[in-house]
Image (cartoon, one colour):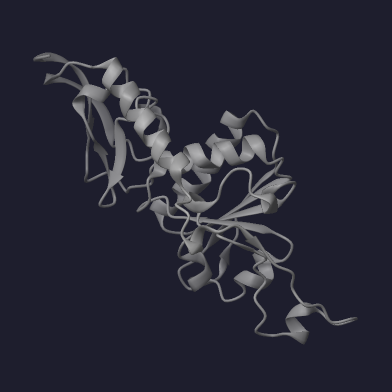
Length: 241
C-alpha cells in the first residue's frame, strides 16, 4: 500500500473543544479524543467521505485533498473488531468489577435523607460505564442516570436529586474512549429494557458530548426511551435549559 493524493479529513485543533460528537459518526473508528482534542488515529482508517463533518458543533472538521495512505477497509474493520473485543473483556474480574446490589435502610414515616443525613443513595456496584455489563441485573427496567465524572463533586445534592431509585453509570466524554463508551451504552439500552435515561453533565462544552452519546445510543438501539438532559454549573447549581 502506498500514499496517494486523495480526500481525507482535516481537524482544526484551535476550533476543536474535544466534545467527542464526531467519534461515533465515524463508522471506521478513525477518530479518537486524545489529550482533549479529536485526532485522526490512522489515515488508513479514514475513507474521506466526511460522515463526521456534520456532527462537529464547532466546524472543526473539513475535507482536504493531500498525500495520504490509501483507505484500507480491511484494516479499519480489524481495528473496530479489536476495540469490540477489548470492551467485551471488561469487567476484568477484579473486585471493583464484581456486580453487587444492596438495600438501603428505611425509617418509617421519615424521609431517608432526614433519618440518615449521611446515607449513600447508591444501590449497586460498579458504576463506571466501562465496567458495567449490559446484562447487569440493576439495569433491568431501571430509571438510569448517566453522569459525567465531575458532576458528583460539583453538585452537593447529587445523591438526593439523582440517585434515589435510580441506577447509575459514570463516564467522561473527553478523557475516556468515546467510541467504546458509545458501543457499550448502545448495548446496555438494547438489552436491559431501561425505562428512562437522564444525562447529567457539567456546563463546560466538552461535557455536552455525553448527551450526544446518549442520543446516538438511543437511536442505534432502536428503542423509544425518554431522555432528560440536566446541566450542572461549575459552582454546583443546575442551569435551566
